[in-house]
Length: 224
Image (tube, rainbow, N blue to C red; front, side):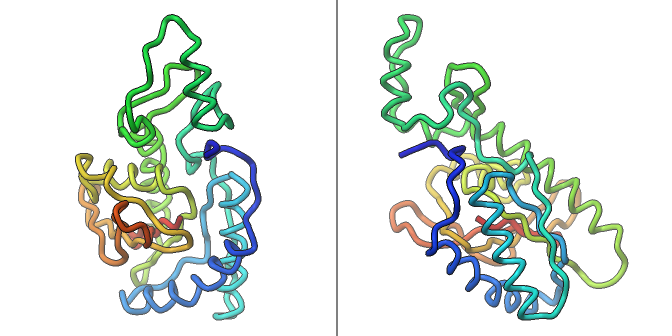
């Protein structure tokens, strides 16, 4: 399986999923008694950008409102440094040839604080900290607007989003590796204070029965 940093476009199925997500998001935001912000923030990786663009277009069609996408480097998936865009098998084989290194730990891809021993690599928690910092800063801008509670959508990747939720206190680090997220689904996080974030809608998906969502809200949202 290739690294998350491959510049691959969104598939036709992915476009259909993103388009269908628009109506579900609008219904969920309404049920929360909130208003959807017209700015979506997206990871700069192509498939995330295309997901956000399709979603914004569908939201415009359904509401008649203007929805715009802003790409953010801070929302990229965990970086693998000089091993970026190798398959996981190639990473293991390449590092095994380095006499200074021992074998990679089992399931290294899911260990929150493990960083590949190569230049430029990040751990999942480091990527989550970067993503969480952007969510906080972005929602500070929303908080400056008067009126009803607002939801902002963040379109990014499962690993950085789940570990951002750890830094925000909405998911336990001891359980984060048990969960994943389904495509074009949302988990809604509500920021109640600078230090308290609570999941108010959506469900993390158990890896044992892979299926469901991701999003954040200040209402803000993080969408995979």
